[in-house]
Amino acid sequence: MTRPAPTPPGDPIAYYFREALLIGVGATRLYLVRHAQALSNTGEAREWSDPPLTEVGRLQAQRLAERLARQGLDAIVSSPSRRALETAQFIAQATGLPVQVEEDLHEVVMGSPENDPRQLEGEAARALARRLAREMRWDAFPGSEGSRAARARVRAVMDRIARRFRGQRVAVVTHFGFIQTYLAIALGVRRDFLFYTFNASITSVRVKGRRRVIWRVNDIAHLDGLPSGFGGIS
Image 1 (cartoon, rainbow, N blue to C red):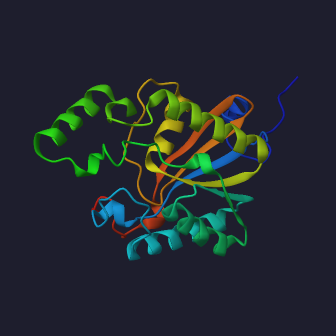
Image 2 (image 1 turned 90 degrees about the vertical axis):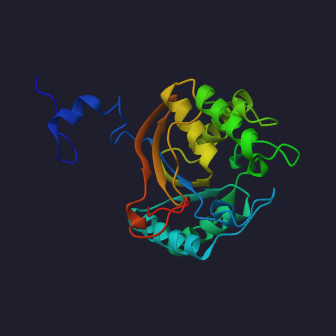
């Protein structure tokens, strides 16, 4: 007995990985999008606040929206923060889909107004940077949400979204730390973050049941030539 030909036609070896890597088997496709550049990403807003997008951020969001519209979406879910909602609205305008707000998509809390890492200077800032490099976990930030709580929240809300939109393509507009945490969960690693998440980047994860498969990480091909969140060229 011979195995069936791949449908659609393609690499025949992919047949063996269809279930393992969720290739064309009805998985939910989650496109985790970091919000476009906001004033907080350029140093223009250093206080504990919810800043809007910059002019560059609006350009990034427009490019992002055009790309997601071309590849096709079934739903848009967003963090309640202003910068995420502004980014999500660009996607909504390009696709004609409504934006659904999910409160638990908010950023990992990395401190508090009383323990704001953006206000640290000198040796205090250097000490926090050293601790973060050593531990690689959200617990390094004084007054933070903490690794255990962040992981529980991120896992729960992403599982809810995957169930609600089973088998569909969903843009999930969220934040730097949230995306890092979800990938750490998907990879089963102890550290909470693995790379710098670019503004308006796309990270794709396919979900089916309890299986999570990472398909694309920190994709910014649509931002060619635009400045990135930390001042370089994306």
